[in-house]
Image: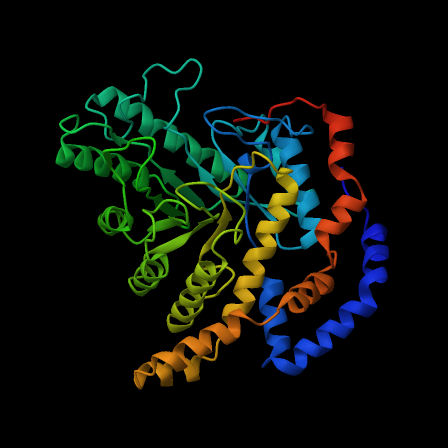
Length: 424
């Protein structure tokens, strides 16, 4: 289903007077508000196909109903999100969960919806039906050559699908590792993994990027073969200029200084992009900004500073993606909240007075530096984000309109109350 433009227009009309009043107040209190609005209009966050269905935990899954039953329905849901917020015009697919029956038709449907295909994601952390060799003891790291070969071929297949759909990047996340001391030869596991990644890298089209994602633990708990940003950086440095580290905010040990990691990867030209989510304890995959909003702001502060230092395009030179699992929320409402949190935080980071911050740093004035950052973080930038959405043709309050139109109720009526999205 889709929400018609006239309903978006009527919704905006009912809120316009109050929006303009709030916007004028913000314009009087921040520098260069028009520049911030333009930057927000350019910014886009890719939606992962797997986040559109109700997620779960290893203990159970509680369907909310109306989950997309096919790739086409997933694209329909993302088009709905994009119509509401005008910042979700990209979809990130997971293979084999989202293999298109007809790549040409899928690409045409995406164009009809105004969507593009972002990073393709491979899957060697599960055994699929009919799969010849098991990944129980790893994929690219596996001691058996035939298992490693199977994992390589799968990634090459993902690249081929991506080429057909117009994608330009591959994300590789490996569940490889060990659960017990002595289970694995660390050096051999690294070498096998590097050799596999090198073969996959060699198959990348000239304009593609490879993102190597790391994770501190889970599903293996003694070691992970790509366990932290240093290991990912080591792989990507050995692979070549088209390989980059991908940062998932939930893939760190507790209290890791993610903003420092981001700054150094940017400095080295090896930061490829993000999987945004939030967490209280580990890889919780919660709504972006719901637990640690100030940490998210500090990360974006380093992103803006680092991208500016390298002359990078904020909207296009890094991959901006969400990676979340929704268990107790309506997945589409959760994604609307996550995109909103990302845009709000990006806007706050744009407001940081870089000259004042640098002067405070050079003078070792710790108090002044903190004041500069917190002044930006405490600024209510919601009217600026809403204005960017309004100018782009979206809804002033996407979540409110979603609920007014009873989208989930209509999806349940259309798709059923107990469906399971592909891949879940």
